Image (cartoon, rainbow, N blue to C red; front, side):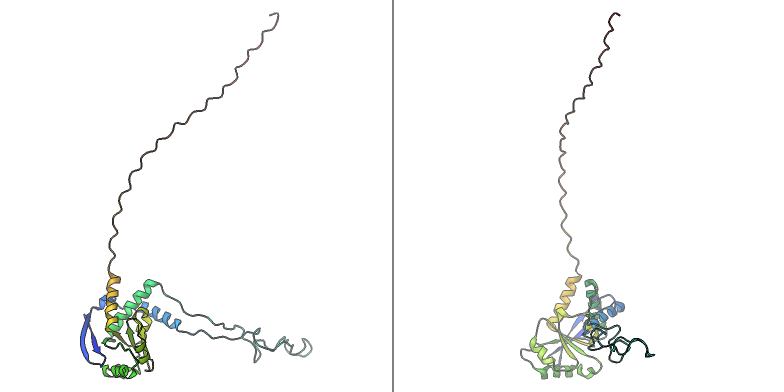
Length: 258
């Protein structure tokens, strides 16, 4: 069992929550975590890069010099790729780099990332940080008292809430290297990129219930009643068609004078 320290909004210790790391995953799946992290980083790319090919660059409609007689190489436009100011031979279009892992892999990677962060001692919980109004001073004071802000130069912090909390979000948005996310939107990439993950007590309880509920085996389906045996259908007798009668062979007529 591993203890998760619980603090109040002032940064004082109020208790502990014992959690078995095996609740999240039996082991840290590093290969899967790498896949999830790369997918998360790819989804963060803006992808608005673009260059122009020779058809997109303005100008270049006039032939620089005549085809023959100059001794120089033939040129048809000053916007060819070999010219300064010309277009790119293989230009780049804007594109979307995001992609998703299969649903089962995403969930397994998320649970494995929680075990990894739990083993590293980067999971804590807080009570009473549900701010109705923005109070940056309260959030900054909590982080300083807990000691998270001391390592902010090397480790980013993430506060996980249960549901939307605009007051807490507005309080934390002006603090460098601090992010706020809802538990339902949390993924493995966010857990891995933030060295300190702070769950609100409601979010932590909901997470544990969700993991336990997801791992529970579904109830066995009720046994189906055996289908009633079908009664044999009596086949109607098929009337036989009368055989075609062959015409009787005619006897040859007797010859006269015989």
